[in-house]
Image 1 (cartoon, rainbow, N blue to C red):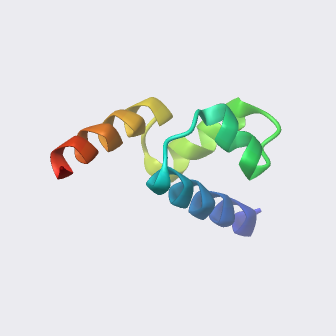
Image 2: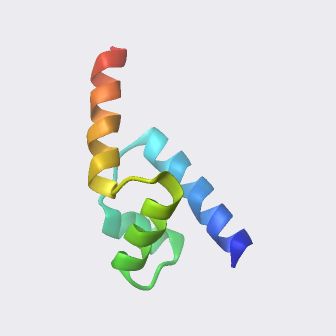
Length: 65
């Protein structure tokens, strides 16, 4: 389970670094049966909700130019 979680986290980070997708899409791509399970895992990985993370990414993208 730890290996699966690590792979999912890595794939999630790589995906979001390229483009923003709805949580439901990423959850499906990563093999989560329930979108809420993905959101819980995401919060565990990042310490932030998906929405908080999205806002921060947008702010840093704008600030970065």
